[in-house]
Structures are given as C-alpha cells and as structure tokens.
Image (cartoon, rainbow over all chains, first blue to last red; front, top):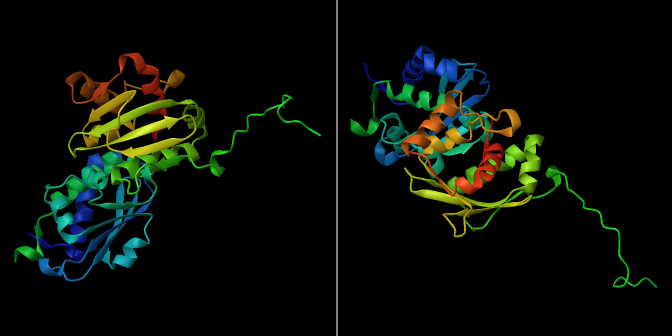
Length: 140
Length: 159
C-alpha cells in the first residue's frame, strides 16, 4: 500500500527496506554517522512546507529514520538538500543520486572522502527509496 | 655593507606544512559542483592522509576528467604542491579520463597496494579493469603516462 511521501509511515517503510537489504548491510559496514535529507518546500507541487528526514545509520543498519523539520536534518553529520521535485526524481529513478550530487542538483554537506568511500551504500539506499510505494502530493 | 648581488647565500628549501598552505585553487569565479567536489576531495585527502603528500608535492601534470553521463568535466592542473581546478577540459592535458559518474567514483575507491600501485584484483579494482577493457573507461595518453596515472590515483583514492 502506498504511503504519503516523506511522512512518518514513509520513514518506517524506508527504514524497513534499508534493513532488508543485504547489499546495504555489507556496503555500509563501518558507517557511523547521521544523515539528514532536507526536502525543500514547493507549494506549487502541493508540498507547502520543508521537511527533514533524520537517519541514524550505524554499521550497516538503519537504527532510526524520523521525519522532522529541515533544521533537525541540518544538524546531521551529512546533509543532502534538494527541492521536493528533485527527491521525487531520485525516488522514481529519473535521477541517479551520484549524478545529482556531481551536478549540484542534490547539495551535499559533509566530509567528502567519507561519502565517496560509501558510494555503494548510498546508491543502495537510493534503491531502497525506489522500493517504497509512494503517494506523491502533486499527483493527487 | 652586504652586497646581495655578489655573494652566494645559503638557501634552504622550506617545505610548508599542508595545514598552513593553500593546496587547491579554482581557476573559475564560479567553480562547477563537480570541480568543487573533486578539489575538495583531493584537498581533504592530502590534508588528512600524510602518505599522499609526497605525490601531491611532486606531481606536475594536467589531468582531464570527463563524466560522460552528465556531460561535464574538469581539468586538474597539478603544479607540484598546488592544484588548480578548472571547469571543463583545458588544452595540453597529460591524461584525460572519460567515464560515467559511477566509474569516476569507483576510481576514488581503488585501494592502493604494494609499491603504491592501485589494486585491480579486488571487487572495485576488477570493476574498474573490466570497464577499461569494455571501453566504458577511457584514458587518453595512458601508455606514456602510467606512472602519472598511478600518482593521480593515489592522491584521488579515499581508501
């Protein structure tokens, strides 16, 4: 059943997908930093307020994924920021996250060598988002 | 009175610590995201990994990197202890690497093994070697510049 994009239900489904992935588990061995996703508001797309996804990821496991404010997400060790429609492109496989970062479509804050070392884990995490059936607010 | 022009002065080559010198400069007023990322990655590597410093200080080469699936590239102009990053490909390059974004990221994940040579026999290395054989990773100017490529790989590697 589809869940509302970037809702608490979405966060739970996403966490479950990450924890089901053996690829993520092995690729993220040794990862011990928090990751924040800032989803910027786009009122014309029926996404009126920015949201923050705070992910507590540790050694190949998603310990917690919470939806909060953009400010919550900005306190994480690594922060990825993009408008709602860009995140939708990532989650629907129209935009590869690595390419998006290199092009500046997804803005990254955090230690670059660390994020590059875990490229495979971040790619698998993106794959996990694509496996969560989502109800998009601009498609209502 | 001392005549500076007549005498020979003992000169010491002073090597500044990486913490106290600017390592990376950007040639363009607005560096592209890709240029900022590569420059930032190399700077962080050299500042935090002392084993990369010798390569960085001795490397003189102009290396182009073109990412085929985003149609963007940079030129890394290594000037022996300083790197100037240009948006796009500039002329007179020693080497030019052409690959998709994923492969470019894989290059920075190559492990460095014995004698400072990149490891091509583990998972990441085999993937890079396979892409080279399949033509999905192209390195213009490779044959006369293998040592340069190895030095660039060592500086670039985050492993």
